Image (tube, rainbow, N blue to C red; front, side, top):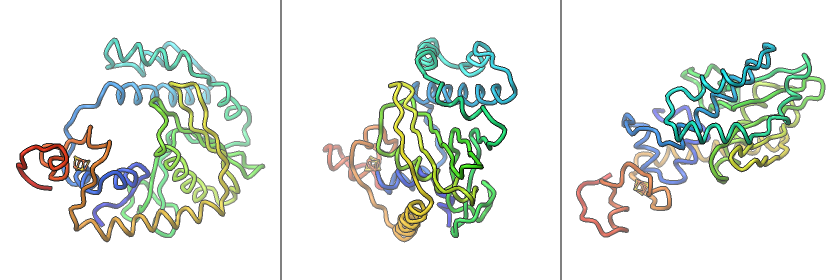
Length: 253
Ligand code: SF4
């Protein structure tokens, strides 16, 4: 199947517009990242480097900031500085407290169609993702899973972190529940939830249903106009978009 493996964001992309999903997977992408994407990536670099340094007993914030902000424009650096300055790291500290924990920092996780773990790049990989940060409290059969967000709240993020939970349950068979945390760094706000293994198995069935539908419909050129059209690179050639906006039709997708 040429669209495998799937990721949470690819499933969301399909929901937004099947034609766009297909385009993203069949045509090499050339558009440069936006300033918001640059800052988001730099913030993630900062966070993961800080976690690694803490694990090794060091924590030189200035150096980490300089490394993370390499290549940013002056405005992007300012935005990154503000995010880092206002971000509250305190709730992450228990992750570094005890040796009775496994910590994952941007760890690549993948499962096959039967929910067995597999290599991220494996041909059998069916669903995969890279959660920002998690720690497993072995004695309590519990884990905390964190995803950092630098933009505004979006329903997609809640779906995404639920998907990461599926992966974590597969990798840690004794785990019974996961506290999920969406850390909206720009708004200094944490959206927390508790997910159980039983619920996640039901959720995986839904994911399988979505993937089944995608693989069944991908031979059709479905388009779906919506808010996402504003940033879509296909606008110039999209029949639906032109119909809606009254442009002369030049081609087809
Ligand atoms: S312009 Fe809109 S409808 Fe057309 S392909 Fe892009 S996202 Fe889909």
